[in-house]
Each structure stands twice: as structure tokens, then as C-alpha cells.
Image (tube, rainbow, N blue to C red):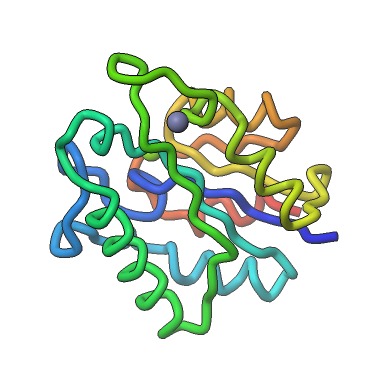
Length: 160
Ligand SMILES: [Mg+2]
Ligand SMILES: [Zn+2]
């Protein structure tokens, strides 16, 4: 079984300085992310991103924008030998269309757990908002709450 570090996207992987981040030019990978992922991958962890992208529902940007940004992220990480198992995103917003996948709902994590046979007792969820913590708890995964846009290498000692 796999041990996985789940990561929120905006504010964890990339700088959350824009109201919505949907352009490659605005997608700035935070300091420490690459080093953190390298070190954790040497410890046997794999990575899955779980992100709310309600801007799609609201018509601010499109699925294609999100896919382009995610392709960019994967390409940048691959330059450092890092791969991401999957990036799951919720396209909905309750004001527009209700769903079961928007965090703090845990449906996207549950999907990942089933698909990739993940050992939840050895996995973690890193987020920068309370709803990330709530999502992790709903899926019985250890939450790690960080300050938005902070250096992930600071929490290495919290991961076994
Ligand atoms: Mg966030
Ligand atoms: Zn959804």
C-alpha cells in the first residue's frame, strides 16, 4: 500500500496572492516545495493534490485554464524528478451548484484512497485553511496546517 502526502494547492504549493490563480504566469511555486517533495519522496511518500477550483463554476476561468496550470506544475516538478500521482479538483461552488467533492467534503480523497490503495494511517494532508484540516479529519488522515505560502521544509519534522 502507498503512503501519500495530500497537498492543498493554492497557498501550499503555489503563492496564493491572486484572488484566483488560473494563469501559468501567476502560478509561482512556493519556496521549499521542491526540496520538501524531494525529501519526502526519498522517504517513500507519493503525492496527490486536492484543490477547490470554484472559479470554474462561477465562470471566472475554465477547466482548460486549470489543466494548463496543472500541466505546468507537473512539468516544473518533473525537472526535479518529482511526480504527482494525481491532481483532483472540485469545479463547483455551492452558490452555483451543490456537490459532494468540494472541501471540506472528503469525496476526492476517498476516490484517491480507493484508486491508489493508500494506507491512510501513514498518510498526511497539508493545507493552509481550516477546511483542509476538516477534509483530512473526515477522511481519517493526519492533518498538517501551515501558514499560507510558508516554507514546507519547516514541517518535515512533523512527518514520520
Ligand atoms: Mg489553500
Ligand atoms: Zn465539487
